[in-house]
Image: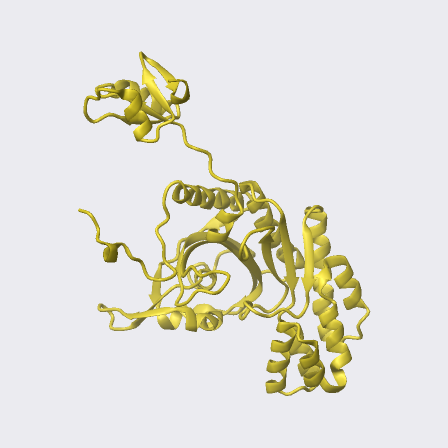
Length: 384
């Protein structure tokens, strides 16, 4: 049955993933999961839909505006379609795996759906792949998550990767120490996100010089850390900066060729994070490939635990990868099923003619095959 134009139309932000991109994405997901398994991360598979109150508990509340809701006809309770998988993994860790030894290493892959897209990511449904390290406060955990994410992407063939590190809680902690009221702190944070120096001066008042120093500290990691070290920061804030410096040194030791930048006041997109965070980019690719950082698990009413992790966005990841190779497809003329089975065992994708054909060469080309079985031998179509 042929679909009409209206039937083929999809909602904004949704798309059909066609060959060869669909196969490329599926293969990339499995290769990433395999790479994370080499670090000792076990795979979990949370459901696509959960009860709303569980899905949006704790850190999940930050995703409330991005969550589709519907009524469950069985329980008569509200359900939510996941907009992110990180908080689901946190729920699993604090409930079903609460007695598993810590630190707990988990990884995952699956589809998410969001109410709206963004300018950089208009897609509302996309695949996520990620990992969470739960139960450790060590800087080595932060570094492991970042190194594993970058190494996984490099293993797929992504090039020109850069990582921007941030400290989302820094501004709030500094404002609290300086007794800046909540409303002013919120507006100050927005001004810092926009890199609006004039607004920062106006809102920070007598502390304008200090916040301007934070604003100027953004840039290549070594220079940024030097600029941060020159600032007279309160002890609590300085501890966060020291942690960032330690993480940077660990990552540089593991991946000396990786380009690292630091923006200590960036906050957008890290609503539930509470420590060192990072965003991964690739040269010439629209949008971020992934992001991650430190947070606290407090889902499902379980005890709060320190955690760190990351999520990779497969729509962006695919744009950073080389074009997929054309698969080897051999056309096997009608009534040669035994030969086709032999070729499949040898690693070929073998298409068998369902009806006798007058011109096997033309039929093979019509079906986008690269080779043809002719007189018992596999021949490349280019030579026929």
